[in-house]
Image (cartoon, rainbow, N blue to C red; front, side, top):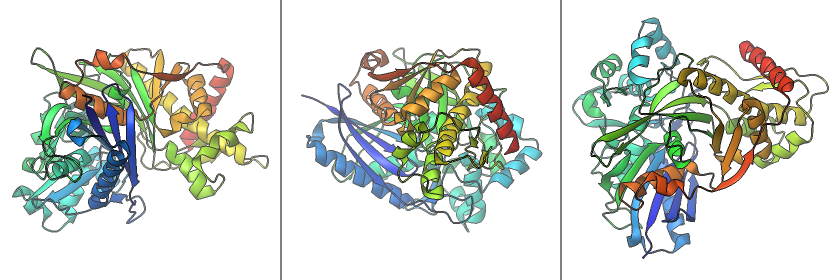
Length: 496
């Protein structure tokens, strides 16, 4: 009889649940949004209970539309927005809103830590930079600002985690408080060389070690369902990965040098570097891709270089909601195609600062080169070009760090459906862009880890054999035009 895998993809604006068959066909999906909370400019929060409700709603919708025997579900995989930080009490109730990865409230603290000379040690241990993007200073802020929270954390009555930790806790009826290395490595508290929470880093930010989750494998059972509406007790939760690492796995980038880019709220480009930790000298992040057990009994740690652009699809949303030049995100491709070029307009999508390789949280978005002849079409095209040009900066830095030359890039995420954006990306990167049939690679990666974790599939090679390609985009723009666009882009970035 057929068996199934449930993939829970908890994202920044909503939660998606996919039900997949053993042949990796999507049998059903459910989706539910939740509210964004903006207490102050630059602050972004989520209500953890709203996140949990969205997961329950999406799961119920997926199960209802599939009409399967839920006792045939072999495993559950979890993937999540990564650096977003949640704090709960021993009773399982949130003690504060979750602080979202986009939140910039700790920028002054990060600057203070850099000025105090801590950057080098943090980079060497974590592969990260001191930026408010990551979880560590969010946890420190909570400990300092929420009355009594530090004492609760020191007493083991308050616990911190990323969203995967929170979801597994709820799915398991409160019995598990765990995370995996791909999420732990985004906190500024986890040493990617020792594969443990780091005493010195925790002391630097004043985070009690006992308040952090147990770090378990990305692949393999870590908890079981208990008391979850719609599901029987005892289903293994057997796959965990942060959203971008899950997408790398779902894109079947199992070998060193293989890379993917996910176009969601932001754009995230990851390159698998295998079991080699590659320190970056060019503004990239070094992160854990996943930890899996080997048949020999040892653990397989795969690492990745990552470049993150904070704004990608959110730029299109801003054109819709902020400027009103489109009524829906899907309109942007036709509008951008209505003109032959951007008319010299350059759009730098630094609406939440500049991420890698620049790491300038103070930077602001820019529309540069406007004239009386500039219209909606030129701005729309410049926006797509800006999203693609950001990734050129990322890939240049990544290749310099790794010594590897990318021959193709696998893409996923909602904006990867935009054919013009994908062609621009191929032209500007100078490499082939490969788009799979299933763009929800993040959820697929979680499902694959879970299925492999319970033996539903025997090897990563077995699942890679069924990878289905939708379309390939090959570079066609003249080299001189590419060079001119990159030169104007560099000048515009310098003005942000």
